[in-house]
Image 1 (spheres, helix red, strand yellow):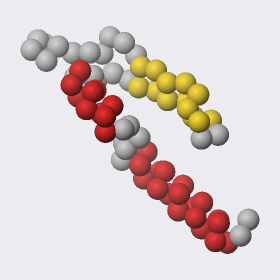
Image 2 (cartoon, one colour; image 1 turned 90 degrees about the vertical axis):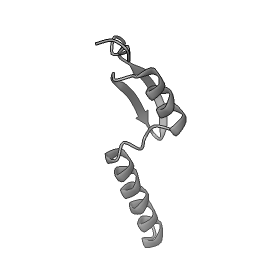
Image 3 (cartoon, rainbow, N blue to C red; image 1 turned 120 degrees about the horizontal axis):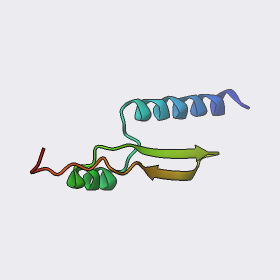
Image 4 (tube, rainbow, N blue to C red; image 1 turned 90 degrees about the horizontal axis):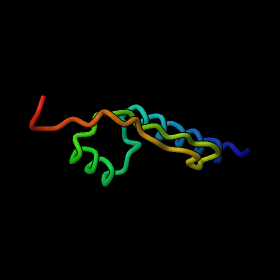
Length: 68
């Protein structure tokens, strides 16, 4: 691995960590849908070798905005 490619890889990994810490892993469209649904549950995504293997959510976490 050349020093240049290693630097690019390190920069990409740092950006990845920054986005995960900043909760920027969701697309803006999905984030709008979650807000519209008042979703407060748990989303999970499993990634291996840069590909999404599995994703899901836990049901029962939707809240009615007009109720308690």
